Amino acid sequence: MSISAIVPVWNGRPLLEKLIASLERQTLAAAELLVVDNGSTDGAPDLARERGARVIPMGRNAGFAAAVNRGIEESRGEWVAVLNSDVELAPDYFDVLHTAAESPEAWFATGKILAAGTTDSIDATFDLVCRGATPWRAGSGRTDGPSFAAPRPIWSAPWTAALFRAELFRRVGRLETSFESYLEDVDFGMRCAARKLSGLYVPTAIAWHRGSAALGRWHPETVRHIARNQVLLLARHYPALAPHLWPAVVAQTLWGALALRHGAGIACLRGKWEGLRRFHAARQTSTPIDQNVLGFFLESNERSIREIQAATGFDTYWKMYFLLTRGGTK
Image (cartoon, rainbow, N blue to C red; front, side):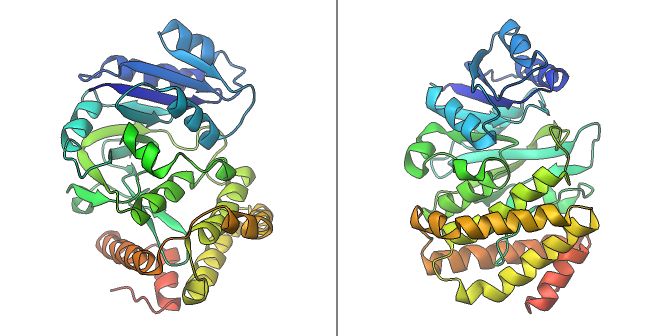
């Protein structure tokens, strides 16, 4: 087997250097490293070349989705690892993921991603989506514990540090470029769920992620992208909006309130407006998930959200969402 590692880059040379060093220490080494440059100006591409990477210039900041797609297009491995440039991997990260994903039923795998500089603070595990089309990166910001200790099948992996069978992209397609950045991995996961192609969460594979290194979690541009793409998830995957209209209003209004609290209310409104303007076009160029499959997917996702929230302490957002949608908080 062979692994092609793909790293989209937009500046952040010191962070990229740490990632490459961790790739050089892998017990199961990648056969090739493709660094896709989104118009860096700090010498990050030069560093990548010096360390043996093949640099693919995009010529501009084309967004995460377009950069990853270009890397996938040019990759040659049987497996494709997609990595954020601000990640560091434990030396056995690829080895553990690949061993776990050797089963033919596993199309991708991701590990337990901790916040940089910590040993017990969760940054990412797997993604869950509620009926209102707002995803939750399970455990983000929480202390590690039993809820994140067991391996489990998943439909959606954060593309922070994930390993995919190359064949999966031939079956499902690549990332949706209209998302540019943020939630494009959730969109991909929903397409995997529609085709019943699942992956694995493998908690014994460990990585560390700085998170939002380019702009920041509540930067207006980050918020605008997320707010828009939440609407596009509805447009692209929900065959009928009526059964999910109230959960969608609740989920996205509550998220807007969070953005407002962080000083990004205007950016959120701009994003929602952009999403509504693109709604019809997004619907026309996609294939919604079968209603029964979508119902099972969303119900199982909400059940997992409730279980993990109950075990680790309810966020106000999810407590209000389940109360207002009669989903309960038990």
